[in-house]
Image 1 (cartoon, rainbow, N blue to C red):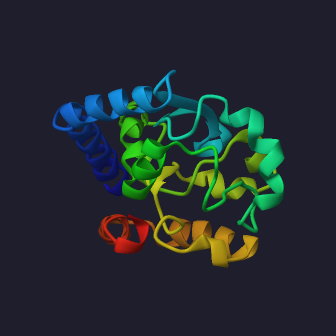
Image 2 (tube, helix red, strand yellow; image 1 turned 90 degrees about the vertical axis):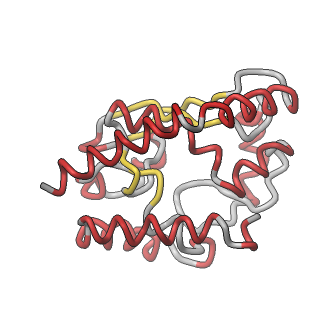
Length: 195
């Protein structure tokens, strides 16, 4: 029953994002292209449920040539984990900072929700090289837009603590757990420190 309800909720959220949010979606796409010409979408291979690869779609928040400069910034990684992230990444555009602060860059992942490759709530999906450094048993549930990682300040946690958040969700997953994370995600997005 939980899996059916979760899938139905994913489809409803995806359809709402793609229909009700369409005017906002088009404005954001236009702003991205004006700020930095190029494809407004960022499409990247990620590893999902049971180790299956899929293409995650996000609205682009970085300059078009961002990947070429990643190696130059690796020493600035603020995470003690397998993925790279820095607070003031110079590759992020002006529009990109706003999209990240409001999580609006995630709206295009509604397509992933519709195709069933992602869920609203679930562990973070990593690129193949990052997932190769992580245990495969974290892939026993569908990856999501938000989970315990997104509502916790992971920059202050170790790799083991971050991984434990994935296992925490796997152990506790259920309707009320998902509802709790959704509410905390909304609160986190509107927190003044993130905007």
